[in-house]
Picture (cartoon, rainbow, N blue to C red):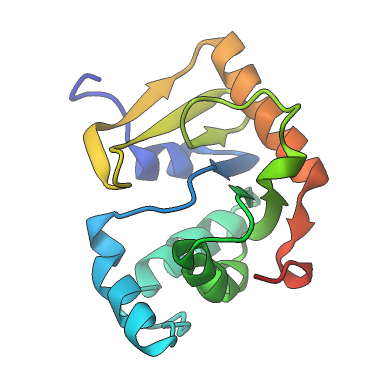
Length: 176
């Protein structure tokens, strides 16, 4: 990855029609949410205030993107029974929806015949894929992402997302 490679914010700002996010891990350990996750594990209470310091930057970013006419969708492939981390994600998804995202969940056993990319990814306008790189413990690894614009790679990631989306269960109908 070169230092000139665009990051997530730049790619989202350039999106014209769609931004889709495929998540496939059962646990993440990214530092920027560690404190919130630990609080949830202790109290079973999740910050779901879209205006909180934790959520406001994301909510503002997604609201602005959706206001430009970009459809933002997120699909999560999860093992069942779900991990504590997935329970935590599920508890906060109401804020993603409030911001304008559409979210679906797909039990992993229903994804066995879907060709999935090796890493979580975002796909912008079906043309550019941003693959997230995580370490085994779920934290960001170096480099944290990889941008790919080859048509075959973007198509593969888009097709995987759409297959998961088609089978996925809308958030409001998925219980953990």
